[in-house]
Image (cartoon, rainbow, N blue to C red; front, side, top):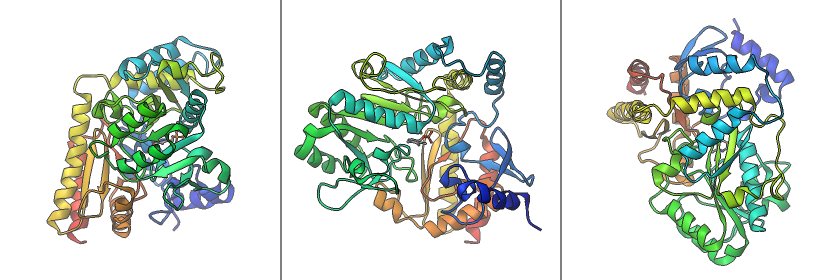
Length: 426
Ligand SMILES: *Cc1c(COP(=O)(O)O)cnc(C)c1O
């Protein structure tokens, strides 16, 4: 008998490319069919066949308070009753902008947008407009949304100007992007030595969360900061994933580095489509209508999204919020590591705040190449075995995982006992 999941996926593929509205949802990396969800509550989701899962994806990061948090839902309901959108300023936008600037000291001014992609592409244009330069540096394996300038992979040669990583991106645009290795400070120094005067911006995920999870080596972010300062380039921290996920002052607070611009998304929308970019006042003042860099959005600062974001940003300020979230996440990663290693499996894991990485390898990877060398088949086997037992991890060996405040000892223990069963029979 075919399941409802299977039926829906077959129908969807006829009318939506690949049956999904964002590629990684399609399970291509792990094989099999995606799960269609019907309902979420706290740490749990239910699929269209009625099966329940403990969810470690959390919609890829936004749901730090779990699914359908009552206060967030209430704020969305209440705000909706007064109109869904105005295309004119509202008081709540001011309130969330003030809150973002208060929580993240490097952000003096901020503009709201609707997705992380929009935030990233706007920050790049702004950095180019501010500096009057075209070239940008990004790092292999970091994802900043699907803007043309950022869908670029390393080319060949010493000073590698990028090649498009997607069809449809003109080589001329990709050629303005230089792709270097994350955690390779020397590579960045060398590039700045050669063409520092041409570099508009360096964009980086301060903790890389789109190639599994890679933390910055001591000195890496510091080097980016000092090179950008020295050469008048704009340092952009893409904190769409790490913002309010690893701590109340984001990754820049954890590592004590002030970028010039920051992009935010995911958590700040509380599950609604909202993102932001902000930073130094002198740079932000280059934006229209004050300055010459154009950027706009019909639904930017949408009242319903802002309400969900404001409620979320209020709740994460409760004392002990990040300590508890970090403890829970560490219980998961420590527990999985102990369990796998007991059974002689090359496996390790780490976490920072409420995000984590699982690696089928002896050591925790510190570069794109090391992540690529992990045992992908091992992960895929683990993924499907866990899915079967009602534990939903991200359907790819190259994605970070997320824990919410609604995950507790009960969920962690259930997860660890499922893993124990699987690793014992590995
Ligand atoms: C998710 C993500 C984006 C893109 O955000 P969207 O809202 O999906 O457009 C950009 N940068 C990072 C680091 C992300 O994790």
